Image (cartoon, rainbow, N blue to C red):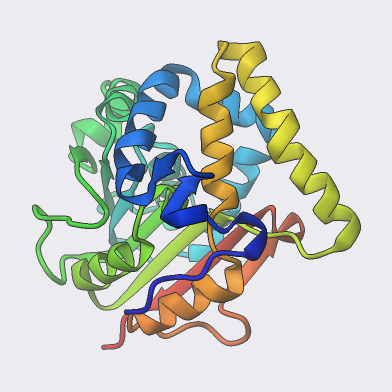
Amino acid sequence: MPALEHPSSARPKDDTLYGDIVPIDAKEEIMDRTYCKVADRYDMVLEAMSLGLNQYWKKKFVRLMSPAAGLKMIDMAGGTGQIARNYLEYQDLVNSDKSSSVHVVDLNEQMLRVGRHRFSSSQWTKDGRISFAQGSAENLVNVADNSFDIYSISAGMHNIPHPELALSEAYRVLKPGGVFACLEYGHVDTPIVKQLHRWHLETFAPAIGQLLVNKRESYERLVCSALSFPHQRDFAKAIRRAGFRLPPGKGYELMHHGYMVAFFGTKPE
């Protein structure tokens, strides 16, 4: 599969992610160390950085999935369990379903620690409806072929060195007819909003990281990773190249002019 193209405004120099400092091949390790530093307060800081929109985006993402009852979901890069919680709440409240389940996978053990602790006394854990495991999106060695109904990943694809490999793995582990669902930071094309979006990510977000957890550099790296991700048009094409069928139209839905983008694809039966 061809490598994804990066927007010219954020294209890495000399095959690097952060300017000429961090090589692409070191991205996974660098991002893992970054999340170790921010795991305990990650969700709180993200909520502040998004001005309270983070939960809205994730709840809407699950509503757009519109999952049927009884489905098994694998949530990649979902360590703290926000998507898992929204998914199980949707199944409980909308579908009155107590059989659906979610398997949370994350590369970062500290993020998983937060998630496990958060759900340790929940009824979902007692009923065996949520589980956690460490793993890489590029090589899900402990996940069988055709084993899940939904593959979700929220604000995690931009941290993966080779997104096309993650898409290939998503395709492999989904059952025929299964749904690939990805919520990711997008590129805003509306001129005035685009300027605000850039200022928000490059200036406001790291400042909040510094103010709340004294980790400005960590959040600058997270922002740079998000900005380096391909434009939604190009990522939708990559989803199609991986073998998925896209929904009618563009194959994705913008939230707040592209601050976040929800992508969906279906594995042919």
